[in-house]
Image (tube, protein in one colour):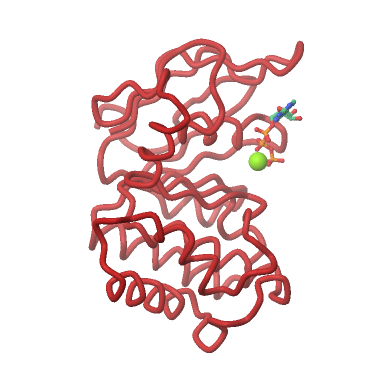
Length: 225
Ligand SMILES: Nc1ncnc2c1ncn2[C@@H]1O[C@H](COP(=O)(O)OP(=O)(O)OP(=O)(O)O)[C@@H](O)[C@H]1O
Ligand SMILES: [Mg+2]
């Protein structure tokens, strides 16, 4: 469903990604590990069409998105991709409900009741029932993370890119979030790429890739799959 062809990215004179090629099949559940500063967030941002690469191609479900306009990219993300940002990117002055609502609000093909149902259902699934109307600014780090996770899933995207989705969560909540990902993976055939530094999380995924010195190599899983 997603193919990267020889993606390179340089910031100033710092070469972060060097000719990375990557193939993700539908329904895969993979993790990417790597040291801090190695380029994991940059790589996810290129996959989502949020950052452009210097060279190479990004192909999603047979569409080459490399040269899409901003407008085309926004439409593409809305329908296909859910993102959990490492720094959440929530709107602090808005409530839990409204932060999630903003992500689904532009969808004309989903009616109001269905939107409301999905939002409340996800709030429940990430364990924030009762906090719907709480201002995000007043939430703990782990709670903000759970709002970001709920928001990433509300459009039932084909692909979820999650950057350290359980980084600030305790073990029990992390397990719950990973179980939620696993159940969505089964129920809606959602494809997941999770960036993580936690070995236990990586262990739960079907394939593990390591990003190191600008290169991505597979550590675990059937390479011919
Ligand atoms: N917009 C930018 N402008 C200049 N340099 C950048 C920019 N974004 C990232 N970098 C640099 O590129 C490198 C990779 O950054 P990136 O955020 O992708 O790393 P990461 O693997 O996600 O790290 P972490 O695990 O700490 O989140 C870093 O050295 C960073 O300073
Ligand atoms: Mg990062």
